[in-house]
Amino acid sequence: MKRAFLSVGLAFLCVALSAQQTASDYIVKTKNVKKTTVAETADGEEAQQEEEKARDFISENFKFYSLCDWQEGMKFMVLPEKYDMVVKTFRDEAQNGKEVSSMSLRHKIMIYKGHTEAADGHAHINFLCQDNGRNYYYEVPNGSFDDYCFGKMGVPTLAYLGDVDIAREKLMGKTLFTKTTLFRVDTEYDGEGYQEVTVPLNDEVTVTNIGVGSRSFPVKIIVEDKNGREYFQNVAISKTNCGMRDDEFINGDNAKFLFAGSFELQDALMEVSKDLAQYIGKVVHTKYTTEMLSKGDGKDRVLKVPRLTSFTIENIAPKNNSDYVTLTLKDVEARRIYFKDVTFKNTDNVAGDIDGHREDYFGYLFAMGEGKARNTSQAARAAIRQGRVILNMTEDEVVLAMGEPDQTAESSNGRHDWIYKRSGGNLLVVQFDGNGRVIGGNVDRSKSTSKKRSTTTKRRTTTSKKKK
Image (cartoon, rainbow, N blue to C red; front, side, top):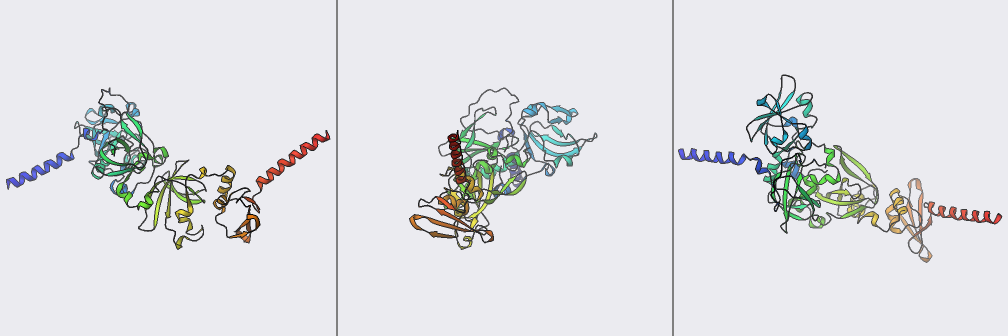
């Protein structure tokens, strides 16, 4: 019996010790970084700004905790930035609320102990420092705790370690694919220095270590490619206490600081067939005006995207076990992220006109390559975006502007007409020459009118000179 109790006791002790992660356990570096002697300064990693909706893997495993929902025992690490050197964050309870230098608490683990209201009416957000056993609190500047927590302000300097622990459990040793080309390599063993490196898109990498990053992007994920090179990204996963608004994650240059902006799980990629996975990273352009979903300022918006808008396909995700998938598209120029549900199957149910299901067919709506890189004049591109036909357009450009014709008519010498049915029973007739260029019909003749005016002006000038 004693032996049984002893075994249980030892097992409990082992579990307790393994759960008690120290601050140093969370500080990780890429390999080959040189150890240097660095004076402790206020040079913390400046907060970056960032975009993009979490994958199912993220939403299922990394819960966002509003300050209002914090639970006692949640762990954070103090990671002060330059601003925190001027405005101190914590007060020492044992020293009658004396302000404490943020640098003296750097890399210390704070355990959340709930909130209280002081005699003077100020709300206190309370912590126990795991490293020195002292009690500290953050004093809410104005109003009650409820007023403050609903503002998503959080507690300055604190990076949420719960995300780091879950990421270690779920991602260590996993195969990922890079979804951006910009990552980082450590340059200081005892400091926060790093340099940016460029890596291939969709490069296969393995997670070798996970630690704490910064307050804004708490999870530092170190990966290694097939050549043995290590690099990392600091990412916000649940966004708990990250101190940034949702709309700040929309900026294209900062999208990489969300997990889905930098990495794709191999398991998630395998859900898409190899035939579709080949499109990831490709550049396409819209052949028609279409509606797409865009996310920003905490809202979902349906926006009209014009013809010849170029996108990089960032991701393809299956949709409810159907023939449809959700494309994640990054605008090549504006860097904004869009989402569009399409099917790659050209079946009878997508054979209708553009107002029906036909627009859902990838091959109908998109063409490969960057739209503006096509051999198309600026005037033609402007007309295509507006759905007009002008003189000297090619047949391809007319299709981009108007779609396929309702009728065609052949004539001599290779000349031919395309006929489009318009509202009110009207017809648009486009006449082509033998080389497939628009030469007439009831099309926009502003270009030819301009030439006629120019000729007329020259004649008037010549006549005026003769009179003189």
